[in-house]
Image (cartoon, rainbow, N blue to C red):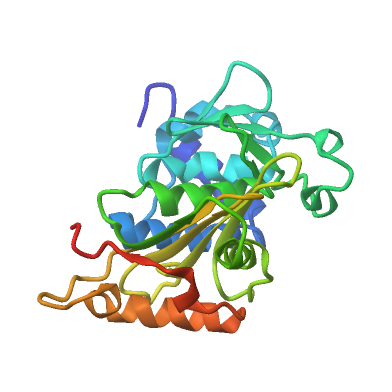
Length: 273
């Protein structure tokens, strides 16, 4: 235990986090399972040092939105993304990524994230100008995209001019997705650029590997990257054969939202291990 924190103090504060989070801690299930799939992070524990740093009192716990307080207790165990408070209220560091809580009134009236604003899991922005619909969505995004050591790029596509491919990018980035498919969206403050990470595998307890599709779609440029931790099939030619389970998942997902996967013109990257 860190200096100044007794075992009783740790247990009582940890129990308070768990009891206060009844009905809402489930928001972290997908991020936790994904982190476990790419970095073997289970079992997950509440960090004594984080408990001491962030929860000196009940008032301190409730000073920040509930989702952020919950994450502070265990976030350092997720691929090294410990939460630390910034210099200003509402500013935080998620690992090395700076995020800021965006007040409801600061979001453009016509922006979709304003309509679904949840003060317990608020909209956040990054230093790069990305706007996430919730803090928990930002965590899923960072877990999926920052585990570079484990996830290999399987295939990719880019475009820098309007046309069919850009239309497909926009469909992937903005189409409605079934609730059982984990994903994280982000957008520019003016809504002109949309990005999305679709977690094809890894967000459920029984998933044996992680795979995701990352999409970016602006007015005239965009890209798609497919990544996976599925074991490479030696001697296989092409990305569909080198990771057949991932290939089947991405084909099924594209078909479900009406996107022709072949029309994306994905370039094979499976040879780069």
